[in-house]
Image 1: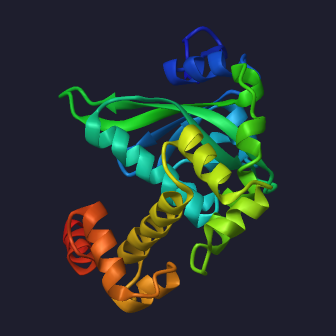
Image 2: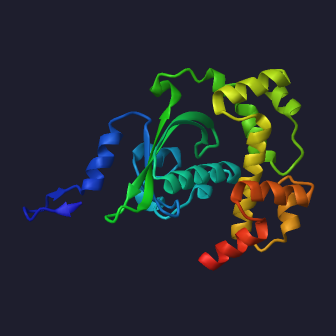
Image 3: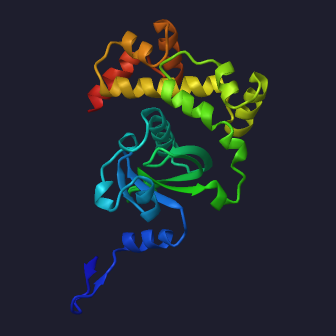
Length: 247
């Protein structure tokens, strides 16, 4: 709050006024992040989702401070996509756990934030619960057990049959539903989750490449290297060295 020069009255900053507008919309979350995907601010609904009482508790935090690592890696990967392209992503379906561990489906829209020189300097995102968005969440909710299983067990052997049983669907039905709702197959989702977790480990640890591969569910290091290079453009070791050089 900024003093007005008129006694003890204070005028909210523009950011505070902006956040207050979103507080008037029940359960709609707003979060602003910097170029490193660190939280800059969030509205009241976003604070409540993460079990916080004030903005001071969230400033500088990352997604993996609040969410399971496999989910956090997916959120950060989408942030990077927004920064890389400079274009917004609208109404992406995301499974988000609150501070009590309760999963809920949201539609998420993210957009880039630009500095005075026109460079992407961060991003802002809005999350709307499906019921608030006027959507029917049931079709997504049916897949939730399988998605949660991948998040919790990405380092272990997981089959499409296991995921299908969790959704009470046949394997072919699960394949169709995944493609319809997410645009990818269950196997592609599992592979993406494993590769995202491998990226985070390469950035955050000095573990051997073979161990990183095994811990992320790849039982063949050469397969891991090929898949990683196909997604990241460089082999795992080169990726790590570049990240270390960039600080």
